[in-house]
Length: 277
Image (cartoon, rainbow, N blue to C red; front, side, top):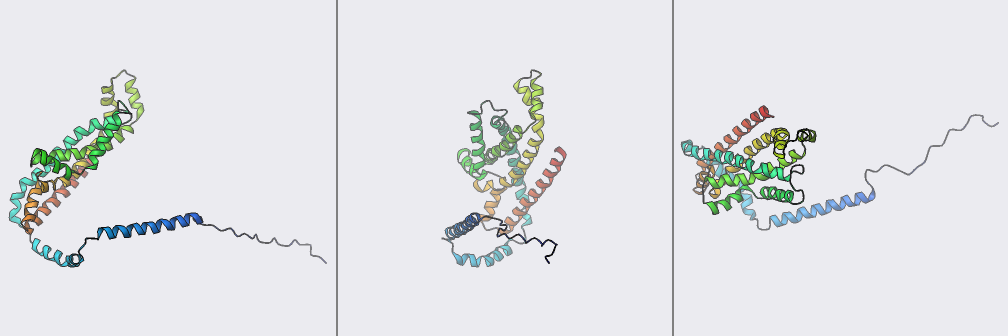
């Protein structure tokens, strides 16, 4: 007698299974890894082509020898680095202020919502920003020392020229992101273009300007410490002289002074930013 109960359903049979990547993607990923490893291998061979490995293996002993010569620091040399360190701070501060003054007009010319011409003026302003950011302050110092002669002035201008690109880029991006409603409200009163910038754009971008300028000043302190290596004034002049005469205890003291200045600038920048922003 046939059973009246239905037979259980047969389980579904399928050969499909989940894959994180398709076969084509796996092949492309494998090829990318092979090409990447080949590129790294080639770059390593190029970089080490002229390497003298005897010097590399002897490096730990040389580090130990130089480290022993650098200690203890020459504390009697401290009086002689006070003035160069003050020059370094002046180079960073005045260079930042000059760079900020030059960067603001460039930023307004580069921003889409404030430039007088998107097709002609804006590309020129962007070219200035890119050109400033692409040349290191040390290279600017080399050029300016050849033109103006050695001294603090070359260092200040080189820091300013380097700062234009940094401040200008961040500021024109901030100008483009302002609230357009505030601009429209000021324009509806019949305000001129200058009044719109003063009362609608400047208040919105002032916190960004303060933060960016402080951040750039902190960076410029670090950069200005080495400008003296090419004759642009500051503590770098003393550092070059100490290195040239192998006066390692003096080098240690100069490095400690630079470290203390950088730490102090970090602390001061953080405090001021907290108050302003």
